[in-house]
Length: 226
Length: 364
Image (cartoon, rainbow over all chains, first blue to last red; front, side, top):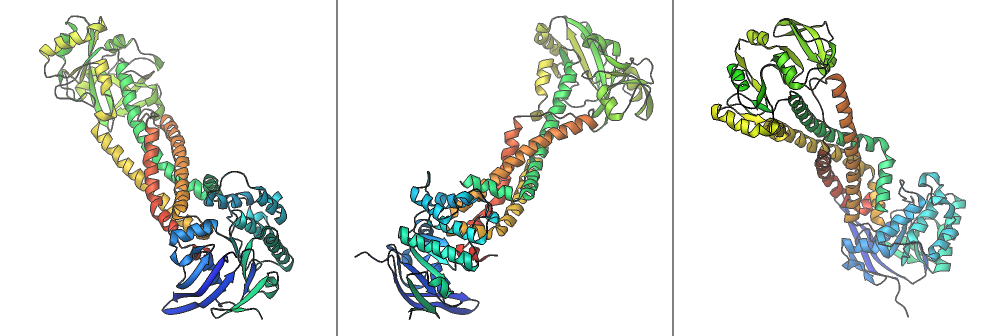
């Protein structure tokens, strides 16, 4: 039996807002298996973005245990978390977050460069580009693309280094229904064809329905779907 | 890939890049122009001194090799020099400063013409009376003078009778005896030029001269020419040092302001890079490379602008200044400017490298 790719026990995160301590996570327990597509659903302020940021190594946890692909996040230093972002996790953000000065191809290439990968793209990733329908847009700048196209580029960038986990934060938050469905279909396709583990955060139940499993988050606690 | 990002970042804000580079380049131009003017004027002075055609130069006791000297050599020494072995000609010249680096020379035109191989008059003729002056083509161009013009020097009007081809001693010449009378230096000269029958005898003749004129600096033409360097003028070296310091400061401020605002503007992009796993050194590397590239562009612009200043000087003040293009200073000026630019980017770059990824991503 293989170890889960994400194992979280009693995760807590408290941060200071002015003179008030905000308890964003109040003892979260979660296990995600390899190749799982999990949706975390919750309203604003429920703590789901905080969980996303901790899993992505963007902020350290306050207490608890977070094991990602065998790495204990509590023990990681700032540079350790940087390394985690480099190779273990890939991000898809609501606002796409593409570098505006670079072309589509270069936005993907810079992620490889940061991770220290050289040489031509592997065949599996070329297939991903075809699946995402952006092969003919590699020379375009982000401003020349629609929102849906930009998000597909962001997905391509997030998986170019074959991360253990793809973290998606409201990936359809800025898209219309048609593009939302397209993007979610593509994410599910990546999950099924490549076995890519995906953890998606959303407040939209329709988007969450594309996942294998849904958990709900409220007031810093996780609840399994009813 | 990083270089591509750096280049695209600079291209993304072309006006900012251009203005920053231009400002960096101004420092390079300042240095190259100053050094070029110093070098150019020395070279020009050397060429004009060589244009006299002398083999030996006798300067007043206690004077330096270059610089304006008051007329305090007894003119009888000219006659004495003419009688020495191997000496075929000797002529004394009176130099009168006119303010700044401008001078007027009082000469015996027949003697000087004979020694130098003759004057070429572009227009007009040599002076003949006490009210006449001749000028070279550069002085005529700068002051917009022509044959028949009247020029006021030493509170007196002089008729310009001839414009001669430049490269002989000075820009403006008057009859020596008239200038001596006007400046109350009758019987005195500033410099004695000596021509020999055989230039190979130069050192022997100098040695012979020094037996009698032990207090006088006596140079061969080659020795004097070797003195025409920036190192011989301590004031110029100090001034170059001041301009170098200003250039570093200029580069520092320009880059500091440009990069500080650029980094604020690109906070979110830095956050994206960090989310992708870029460490502090990666972000620092991008910003340092951007600055280096901007400094290189600025240096090239600065070098280009030094040709513009040379053209301006040659067009509008050719008699007052001459600017040389001193290639050996290109890397020095560029390096100094790059140093200032790197100092300027240091704080903004470190600040950017230390930015929190999450906060940067939230920046709008």
